[in-house]
Image (tube, one colour):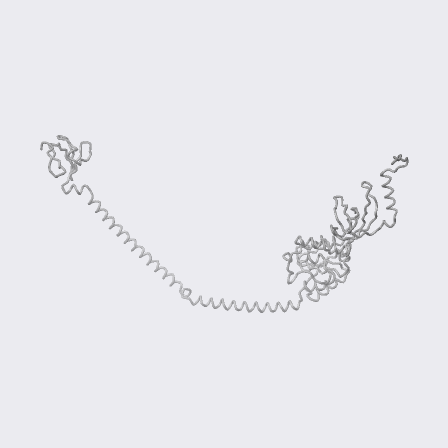
Length: 418
């Protein structure tokens, strides 16, 4: 094959890429196009831009959604989510690849607002914000009822009318807030914080009339849900109609199907309260009467006891018992001393009987040599040796003139001169 010479008009890669970009951007059918596919490789960059791939069974396309567009998203895309992406096709020059620059994303088959609602509900529920253990009981007879709502809707009129009809003595504290629009969540949070600053407000109704999911969206805000749980008094949610459920309903202590029902729950009926008070009063009287009768009977039983009629008898009886105890103690002590004295005398007698002095008194003597050692044998002394003889009444110094020793047979042995 012959080698072709390089034409003078050859395109650079940059020029080629620009031409392709211009062709794509110039194709009206590729600008403002909706693309259906499944999200994969989803990534939210620290810059706030979203990067992902849209794919179907046979193809895929790279997508990017810049922060300015992504910040307006009502829900968070996820891998595996079927969506409709709206945007324009162009070329990313560095990689030389075409990609879809996305302006908006809608869940395929489910609205974006509803998808965002489900995501937030699942996240807060997993966090434990909706736990039944966190729910607080409503006061039986509130002193003041805070109402956080718009003053222009029918909801506030229904609450006021029903509250006045049920119990004119319960005072309402109205805090006007926005209940629709982008500024509504912050305004609702402010209203919840302000209304509880009024003294004696011990329950709050948060409400508005019915509407579409877009109109009720302010009550699907995470900040509103957290403000409800942070409120120091119980919160009753009364948002929309009976079939409308918002995040605020799950976060509140009690959900009322309508604002009118909320007023019914919070404000007690005056006639029922009076009737209940009468019943409780009668029960209290009966209980007090029974208690007094029991106490009178008990008091009568105590008064009839001898100890209360003649208390000095009990004192005298105790005194006599004390004297008897003292007498017994002295008698026991005396017997103990006598027994010990007898034992001591017996021991003294036994000791005296064993005393060497007693033996000496019967005519015996104790002999010792010059050094004071006792003599136990005649063989221990010699003739003319001086020995000491201890008698019962004194001591003798004797010189041995002779000695006689007994042999084992009992015969005498002459030990010397006598």
